[in-house]
Amino acid sequence: MAFERKGKPGWKSFKPKKEFKEELLAIDRVTRVNSWWRQLRFRAVMVIGDGKGRVGLWMWKSWEVVDAIAKSIADAKKNLVTVTMVDGTVPYDLKVKNKSAVVMVHPASKGTWLIAWWAVRKVLSVAGYTDILAKRYGSTNLINNARATIQALTSFKK
Image 1 (cartoon, rainbow, N blue to C red):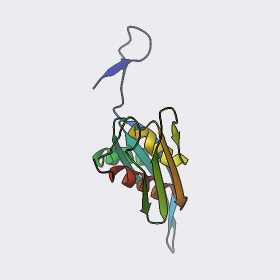
Image 2: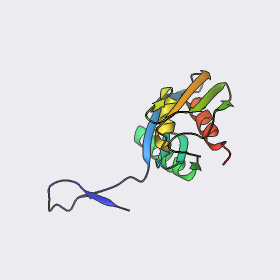
Image 3: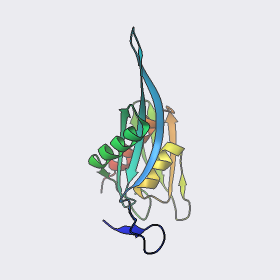
């Protein structure tokens, strides 16, 4: 693990470099209602990637926001998938459906950048893509759209 110096020269404080890019998709307050009480917890949805073709998505619930984020990052690291990448874009057009979310992914020429809905763009950016045109149809649910994007990226034939 590589370290970078933080603070004044000569100090002994070091901050470890992160091996994955981490993007927070959502933090939600979720409540389970019982006949006697309401149980309040927080759900964190995280997407991580190394920028070289590996990406993972996971969500976790906890009593504290920090714990939910840490647990979702740890579980996303355990569930990384490898995606196909050709010069920062995808090899060909593809349309994938996950539940009611439909995501279309198109290759783009150099300098186009990522043109996509924000949840899809976050998944594509942490995976390492630089030039893609993507469009989502149907649901606006960010979790289903992120899952559909990962499903599309892993379904390319090499």
